[in-house]
Structure formats: structure tokens, C-alpha cells
Image (cartoon, rainbow, N blue to C red):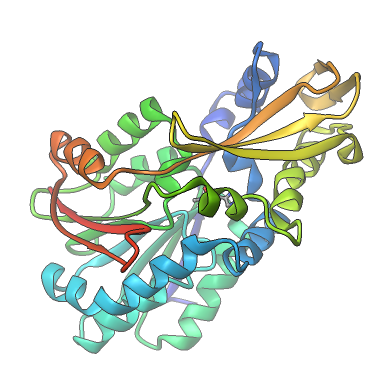
Amino acid sequence: EERLQIQRLQEPTRVVTSTVGSDVVKGLTQTSKSLPPCYFYDDRGSELFERICELPEYYVTRTETAILQQYAGEIAKITGACELVELGSGNSTKTRILLDAYQQLNYPLHYLPIDVCAGILESSAKQLLQDYPSLKVYALAGTYESALAQLTTRKLSSRMICFIGSTLGNLNLQECDVFLSQIKTSLQVGEYFLLGIDLQKPKEIVEPAYNDSQGVTAEFNLNMLEHLNRRFEGDFDTTQFAHWSFYNETEKQIEMHLKSGRSQTVHLKSLNLTVNFAPGETILTEISRKFDLDTIKQQLAAKGLTPIQTWTDQNQWFGLLLCQL
Ligand code: AVI
């Protein structure tokens, strides 16, 4: 299929063989244990995330979708014809709203989805090609860092980088800073960055979104251990860990953990790693920061990514920002 190219990038940790999984080793040998959230997204994890997006408690996707539906036409008019680069594209459901808007203006459709999960990239790209007969897809399977580095070397036309779904919230302040610098490097003057962010709101609304009544988020969280078991010959017993998440009102972020039910030892054979857990000890698997519009706009502007338009919903629960370099 000429309209589809998929490239699998080497992960940074794979460049030097001896550092495979070094991020896992580092996270699990720290005093406060943590794991990088990108390990959520194997095929099963990507599927579970899709189910999260449809949960009644998870207002995030629904709210952003409504904003996109209302303003995609406006976005397309402002940017003009451009290639859409999407970081963390997943099943590309929301992106279709943008593709529809560009198609309506008769702009050529070039889409560069980037995701750590090659499986979901492939299945969603194939579906998109069927639904958009003139679409060209160039997919990159890899981490944001590796994909963004690759992007500077190829270019079809003017570019808009889309980072929707509030995935920026999964990066801590320092990672966020590095990330925004990389975005800047991947754009030329006049090009666009479309950013979706979950805004600060009462705990009563945020917390249930990460503690749903059907237990899908718990399954999503625990699946990370299954993923590590498969990938690094591990023996995590998922029945001995529990999903635990809460809204930290001081930091304005959800913190998602896996809590050890007892004293236990876990091995990750291919990493040559043995990890001891005390009863009640936790692994931080994700933060999900909730943003203040003015603060993030200042941060973007300070990076040279000038916010030129902001859209939100009636409740001001979610923000969509169009920035220009
Ligand atoms: C992908 N990311 C923006 C989601 C979030 O809301 O932070 C991941 C997620 N974790 C638990 N539920 C959803």
C-alpha cells in the first residue's frame, strides 16, 4: 500500500544494548519507586485506554471531542493546508474530526501519527486509509523523543504538530520543558502546535475519572506489570498489587500508583534485576497534571510557541490551544 508507510524507530534505551530497559531499572531501584507511563501502552493497554475514554467518569475525551467538533473548521482555516503530525495518536478517533475539517476545505491530507504502540498504529492507519481515499499516512512507532528527532529530517509541507488528549499532563515539569523545546525544534517559523490540556477543576470531578466504578483504570494500571513481565521476563504477581490513585490538590495532579499488598520480591530476569517490596509500598506509574490556562500560555510563549487562539467548553474543563512558532 503506497499511501501507508510505517517505520519502527529504535527506542533510545535500545541504541546501546546494555541499556535496554534502563528506565525500568532506574525507576525500580529508587527509594520512591516509579515506572515510565509509556509502559502502559502495549496492545492490551492501548485497548484498555480506549475503554477508559468511553467511561462515564472520564470526562476528558468527551469534553475535548466536543471542542474539536465545534472548532476544527476554524483551526483548519487558520493554519491552511498542512501535514498533521500527531504525538500519541492511539486510535486517532479525535484526529478524524480534524481530518474532516481539512478535507472539507479540499486540502491534501497528510497524516504522521506517532505512538509507542506499533499494533494500534497499524490498525488505525489501515482503517483511516479506507475512510479517507486521498489520505497519505506516514506512521512512526517509537517514543516522542525518537520520533521528534526523526521528524526534523523529513517534511512534506507546512506542519502542525498535534498533542491532544492532555498527554502533556503525564510529563513532569522538567520533562515538559524538554518536550516543548523539542516541539520548537521540530517546527519552522510560522508553523503550528495544537495542544489539548485538561484544566484544574474540583477534586470531586477529577478523582472519579481515575477511579472508575467498572475498574477499567485499575486494569489499565495493573496491565503495566503484565507488559513488563512479558517484555523483561518478569514475575510480577498482579494479584499482589492494587490500583491506587488520588488527586494531589497542592500539586494539582492525579497520582496513580500500584500498591504492594504484602512483603514480596520480584525478578525481571532479562534486566538482571531483583526488587523488594515492603507491605503497602507503592510504584508511581503516572502523574496527570491539571493545568491553569494562563500559566501554560506563559510557558508556551516563553518557549517561542505563541498561543494565538484558545478554545474551551462551557464549564472550562478542557482547553485547546493553537500556538504558532
Ligand atoms: C493519556 N493520558 C492523558 C491519560 C490521563 O488522563 O492522564 C492516561 C490515563 N491514565 C489513567 N486514565 C487515563
